[in-house]
Image (cartoon, rainbow, N blue to C red; front, side, top):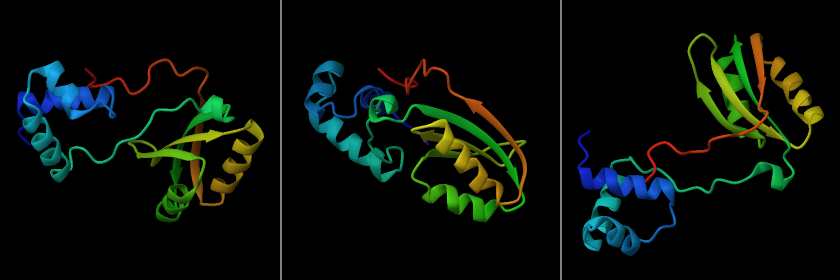
Length: 144
């Protein structure tokens, strides 16, 4: 996919602040606002921009325990369906060596370990847990 320098500049501004107005992006980049508008909608149509979200502090919402779980399983489809529907699963990645990397967020470690017991019922071959001690850098790639 060939994106113009203007497209990339617009994307960088939106990655830094998805609420930034087209007018503000126009002023900061010297790209006409109509071009920003048109390019934005084209990027949505192309599937480059898929959704806008807010980055939140899970601790302030009472979710004090976060862990990345690497899972190798015999029941991949069933487990994946379960993970996609689980309210405490933030993200799921298909990875090499293991089948999935799960980003899970829970209020307590006890609830997290209950979750681990639940996923073990899906024919887990290997499981590796990496607890997050501190989130140092958040969603900073390709920002202005």
